[in-house]
Amino acid sequence: MWQSYSNGLLISAGLIIALGAQNAFVLAQSLRREHHVPVALLCILCDVLLIAAGVFGLAALLARNPLLLGIARWGGVAFLLWYGAQALLRACRPSALTAQASAPRSRRAVLLTALAVTLLNPHVYLDTVLLIGSLGAQQSVPGAYAAGAASTSLLWFLSLALGAAWLAPWLARPLTWRLIDLLVAGMMFAVAWQLMVRPVA
Image 1 (tube, rainbow, N blue to C red):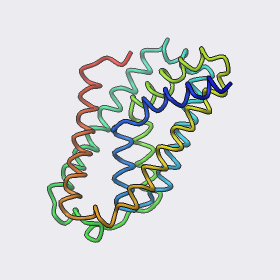
Image 2: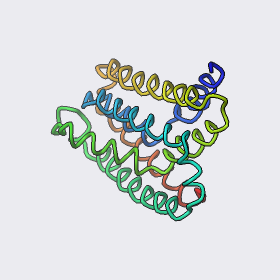
Image 3: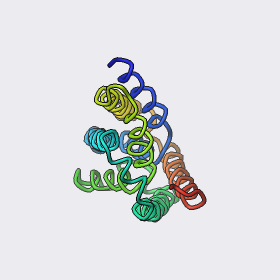
Image 4: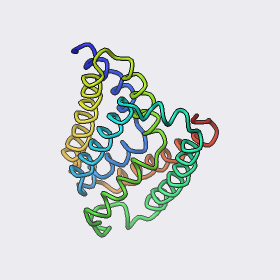
């Protein structure tokens, strides 16, 4: 059982702990101290549900349906391009570089954006459902493997949210906000480009 748990922990760490669209969004929200803990908890919940779905059978279903993967791919490309453009515009407007200069968003608006960043990104399904799920199906104790993968998500997103919020007083400067928004825009465009030029199926 512990071998399956550690396998899930390590495999998930290799996939989740990377600078991607979801991580960039959590980091940006944490630095703004704008509903960052609920955002992290929502990302954890989504990961847990997708990991469980993948480990317990959805991986095989999606692997046999290229149409669904294609829809997820191009929907994700469109969203990533739009979100990247929004971040680029924020970086070009000095009034949007500080938390005081921009109106705070409601928790609902932030969580809906977090859901879109998470669920409209095909890489989330590739990582959690297909890759983690298909490997979990081969473990001696799939439930322990799923728990290990979920533990990685829990530790990572809480660390990212709470750690970034702690650093906010030192990082909340106009130049830092500009760099963060440029980083977010670059990451969104890079992920969208990878999806456009490389088939997901």
